[in-house]
Length: 195
Length: 231
View 1: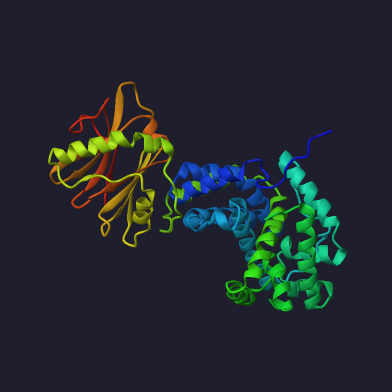
View 2 (view 1 turned 90 degrees about the vertical axis):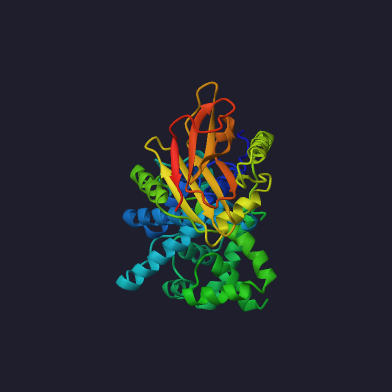
């Protein structure tokens, strides 16, 4: 019997205190601390960028821009408002979403993928903790209703607005908004998020 | 909170609002404690969705990022932080050194009250703060963030090489009247990250770091390892 692994904090197995400490040092202009922060978070940041924009070159641009933004604005990170990794992922997601929406606007691409499987994972690169995290997220996504799951994953992993999700699924916008919230509540409880 | 706004928290946490709606919701958020409470849990949930993906970026990206960062100035806004305990323990030595300098009539230049790191933050955050950096091929980097209005500077040292036995590092402020010691540092003192607050920078043209015999010298006796010219 394998001991259950606590999945809170940083998925790469780095205690959150360490990442926060690194952020404090980065805010002071400490370049070695920045390099350490990069090394400990880059697979998650790049993984999310890749998942949302799908194009490897675009994902690299996003990863680079996110770390530059982290360097420039590290002083804005407030540990009271969430984990350092959460902040990095928020910056990554917003940037990736901007790119996707800009591309959608310019090419009007058909954007219907099979979202139901949840997050992508690069099997070669995955770390043990990430795999466990992935498994738990995938399992919890399966506890959602189809519409909740599609609403959440099309928005988060697909970078779509609720209005786009509404039109892609042909479900009215108010319902999509409600399903997004209901889906997040169910996910939150399934994942045991205590924040 | 209205039912409409209730549903918006989830949409917002997923970044699924368009830009205009996002700005509108953020304005609402600041006056809606129950929205903020719910958002904390949703953010943590969404973070798990994000953290469940993993792809190692190509190695050249790391090099590119680190190189960019070395040439990119940071926003002048820092969060409060506390000096390491080790640094506090070293303080008596430096305070003593500073006292000697003052007693010897060297002038108003001295190492400040270092137990209050918020002073450092104030200097870094000062609107007139300017940064001067000197980098060596070895990776050693010394950065001086100086604020004229606060008459103070913060010296940040990275990757300072290890010392040979029976030597110390000594920091100097160099002005028209020569070099004034800013204090002696042992190998432990230079463990990263090392920052120093320097008060009284009027007339200082550069800050230098030399290797000196144990205990330090009254004037530099070796060629500076690094000399940072203040802008």
